[in-house]
Image 1 (cartoon, rainbow, N blue to C red):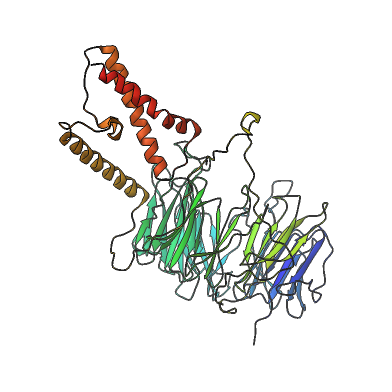
Image 2: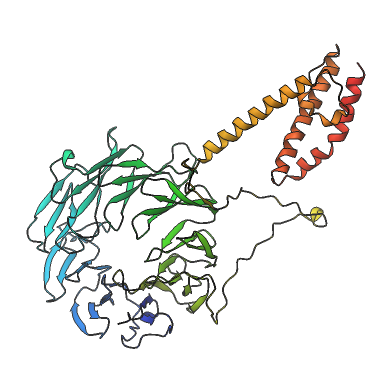
Length: 586
């Protein structure tokens, strides 16, 4: 049986509705549009069969296929909704409020049984951060942070705490995906000179540091983001500080760490300095992609040994997104960047397309692994709201723009279980579309009136680095050299060449040169005239000629020279004549 077409849910000032995904892109009439302007939140279940939303009066749960209303809860102020992995529990959260006399407020985190509609448990959860309990994929355990402890519950019995993990000042935790046994990663920030650390445990073995599967400590960390791979064999940790004490970055300082459940850990060496914008695992769990460095940012794919596999070079990007089968990777520059995207074939590392989605604030792959949506949503941007559905070859298949006085607040694909849509062969030919794709318009640099009738000399603000395959080639066991190693190697080769040149010049000292300009002036033996003023002039001329030689070498390697540098090279003949006249004088 072929899988059904994914739906796209849209919420905004014109109400809430659903759109049928590719290829039809028509509004779904099975679930009627809710024209209310108070729809605050919606959520699909993990398998996409259930849907819940709050319309400002109630929280409703329906079956997506039949639109049958299962339950309706009187929660007009709910702003967060989430289903448990097996659709047994719906978690709701609303802002915590206290009474006017200062008495404790009512519980604001509710857990409902989806089958019966009964409230299983209510908690007081003051902060929106980490509001929702975390479940294992089979719902055998769930967990939430309470003060300095992580409380674990079994089989959705929230009346009894089955286990506790106590760590002083524990700040965050993440349960591993996949089958049992479940693992948990916890982050504890440093204090009073002690380092921050991340530890991995296997439930329920919480008997102190010795029982941990792995431990990684680091000093430069005010907060940490932990990312499990799908097979629960490793965690990537982005440790970041709020302030970069060196003053090099406005965004603070970030480092990337790799921690495996077998106890191995490493710092991922990133060749370019600067912020870490995004890190994402490939769904196959064997490699990950990092986007990092001062703009133009670099993007690199690493394996589980933290060795680089492929470097995508530099470009205007700050995000990375793998398709659900993991065969296509999108590198994009959203937010304060222009919306340029690069779509790559992961297996062959070939560029498929370079579409442009200007002013986008949201990106998400369709579960079919062939389409994705980009959207401009409020409150990030309150003008030009709308969304586009693309094919990965760069074609815009569907476009929706709301009126100028309307807004879109949220769009989301209906999820499907992994493996529902098999991966198809990658194609490089753009699929046909009736809508035009946006093209990147290159803005010309401002030229003052005095230069407008003169030839254009292009100058680039940054050196662009091309994509590079970092895999060791068959028969060559050498690891790819880092940027610093390549720089040192070039320096060593230049010194060696200079020594060889000096030796050659020394051997030819006794034989007169047929043409003075054929020998590099910097390599000529120093001759004194006895007059300090003349010697000073000769020294300055040789210095200028040496600089010209360096500029000519740079031009030979393909570097674009500035206008003043080109003028220097043109003066070489005059300088040589002047030097020759001075030396012939004595």
